[in-house]
Amino acid sequence: MNLLEMRHIRKSFDGVEVLKDISLTVKEGEVLGIIGPSGSGKSTLLRCATKLETYDAGEVTYGGSVGLVFQNFNLFPHFSVLKNIMDAPIRVQKRNRAEVKQEAEELLEKMGLKDKANAYPCQLSGGQQQRVSIARALAMKPDILFFDEPTSALDPELTGEILKVIRQLAQEKMTMVIVTHEMDFAKHVSDHIIFMEEGYIALEGSPEEVFESSNARIQEFLGRFSKNR
Ligand SMILES: Nc1ncnc2c1ncn2[C@@H]1O[C@H](COP(=O)(O)OP(=O)(O)OP(=O)(O)O)[C@@H](O)[C@H]1O
Image (cartoon, rainbow, N blue to C red; front, top):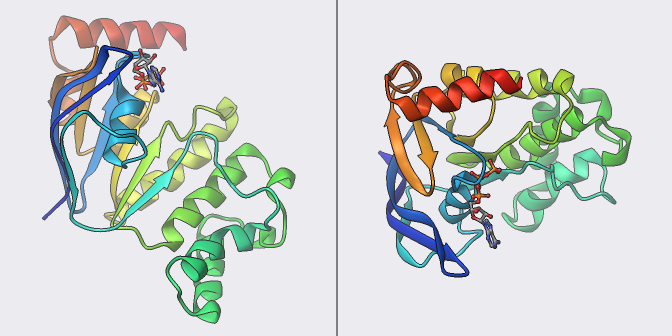
């Protein structure tokens, strides 16, 4: 079953087309990795896919409910960790408080944050905050989870803990779409990779097909990438 379908999506900002006829599908249980140079349209693609951004043409359809994890965590600063996780399932989904609390505690345990339930976001490291925001997204029981550069606001030593959590979700067959600059991670976690360039899908396929492609543009990108690290 397709959980996401984008058909012929176009998006311009101030007359400049940054998404040029993008079509893709994500099947249940699949992880789609989106890579490409800065400014190629990856975040805009994700924002259109999640309808945070309007698009000028085309169609986006879902086969289920959608969850989001942002670059900058976006936690409520005045809510405890537990309340951050419980708020939407109770207020938006109108679910039973005791049941939601139990699930939130289980999610915190899974994220290695059991002892942080009553802490406030400002008392946590960036990596811990990002794990809370993943728990918060999962508490809504999404069918598909979108990540927009989930580690790019983190110090390198905190990146690994987030990538590990996402890898675990992939093993559990969570359907995910991940925009990332972490090439090794993209290669290992994704079932399918899209390489974006100037608003186009320049190349797509399995991780092997994309990373080992003789396509000069992807090799130039990957080479530039490893030099910058
Ligand atoms: N709200 C906006 N208003 C005007 N231009 C925008 C807006 N959002 C994005 N753009 C432009 O659209 C293009 C694609 O941006 P986008 O953020 O999608 O790229 P990206 O591939 O995610 O880049 P990065 O890897 O640096 O995050 C860029 O030229 C950017 O300047």
